[in-house]
Length: 86
Image (cartoon, rainbow, N blue to C red; front, side, top):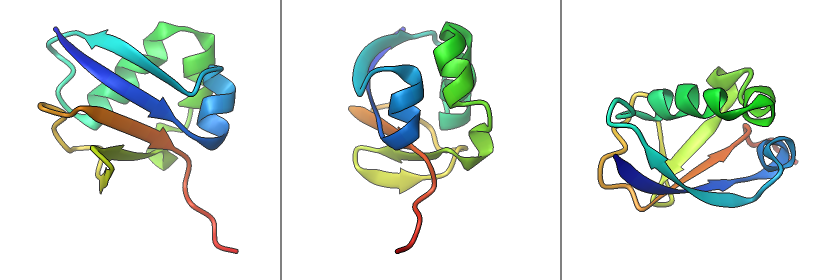
């Protein structure tokens, strides 16, 4: 198991009900996509926030990454909805 700091923004934060947390991840969680799938198993709030996980953006150590990116060595992973212009 590895420990990871997660930070949530915008409506992801609102639906989950917290802005950040530290979690122990199972060994089979190796990519951002695996992380999103794992988080959806943690309760209704997570399932609602990540229902359309293909639109969720991710950043590892403050650098934007694709869902296929490995999370090994990450100190922080941020999850947020798509950015909108304005």
